[in-house]
Length: 161
Ligand SMILES: CC(C)(COP(=O)(O)OP(=O)(O)OC[C@H]1O[C@@H](n2cnc3c(N)ncnc32)[C@H](O)[C@@H]1OP(=O)(O)O)[C@@H](O)C(=O)NCCC(=O)NCCS
Image (cartoon, rainbow, N blue to C red; front, side, top):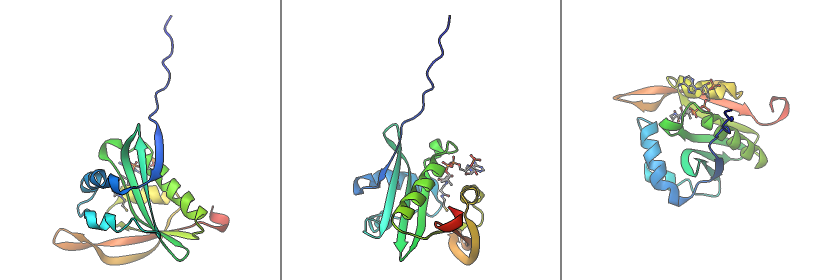
């Protein structure tokens, strides 16, 4: 008689980003974006009004997010998942963590920009309740041209949460 194998799930752990994570961040950033952040930009995010989060799967950093707090608004500046770890819920889990931490820190809304062509990210944000509230024309570099950003917002208070 065969026995059922236990369901093996990767161990998920979310913790604050640390400067020691920079090499792995740069590796994932270059895989994630056509115009990646520089290391200097990441270094500038280790400040008291920023929150950086690392998602580890089985002890390996596979996703990260950076949020800046301005007055009572949390601005999601970056969220990125290693290509090999995508489509398994890591992005949604990390986004929910950012939202919960922002709410805990007294933020009233979360804002973000997303490339108009980035339908994968937009679908994630929309299914977490974000709404498009504006467009920034030519916000992103795009080869030799520019691409618009959609500005999306989520209320963290009242009836929406
Ligand atoms: C956007 C990103 C963070 C999503 O991470 P992920 O771990 O793959 O996302 P999840 O597995 O949690 O999926 C969440 C939702 O995103 C959408 N999504 C994810 N991958 C998708 C795909 N290949 N096609 C269509 N929708 C997709 C779906 O709505 C999905 O929900 P569902 O699985 O219930 O259908 C990831 O694709 C990424 O790192 N992209 C490169 C960096 C980037 O563009 N960041 C956003 C900048 S604004």
